Every structure is written in structure tokens, then in C-alpha cells.
Length: 87
View 1 (cartoon, rainbow, N blue to C red):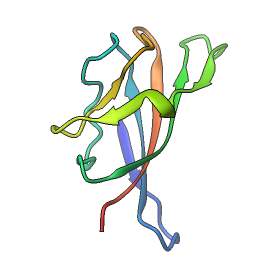
View 2: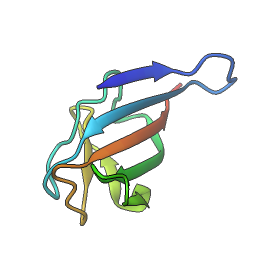
View 3: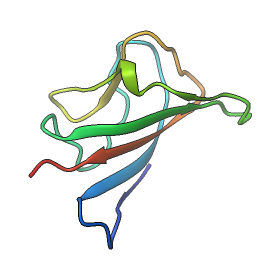
View 4: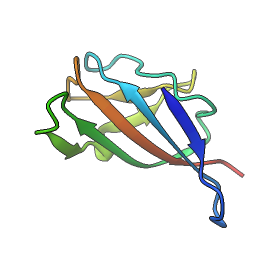
């Protein structure tokens, strides 16, 4: 897992690549992600790179700072997560 705070952007934005998992389970953790942050984009990418889907609409941040997906199973795949840091 890598977490990067993107420099040179006026809005504090961070990005992480995390392993996938079962639906409705905590995925991550995304270092530094907290419940007060706002998800900008969550992409589900398959291990063979064939799948590259936007799953932002079903993603949420758990109280522990992990990403949870409500309907898509991503076991064996990975997620690219971009979020805006809370003020």
C-alpha cells in the first residue's frame, strides 16, 4: 500500500492503492484516511488489468478509515483511492 499526499495542489488530496476484498468489508487501511475526509474517486482494477471500473458511488469511509464497497466484490483485485483531506 502506498499513500501519497499530492504536492502543488491547493486542495489537500491523497491517493492510495489498496488490495480488494469481499463486499461490505473494510478494505485498506488507507493511511491517513479518516471518516471526515471526502472520497473523490475509487477505481476497481482487476489483477489482469482488464477491469477498470468507477465504484465511487458505492464506496464509503468506515469509522476506522478504511474503504467499504456496498455491492462490488474485489477479491484478488485492487482499488485506486483518491480523497480530499478534511479541513
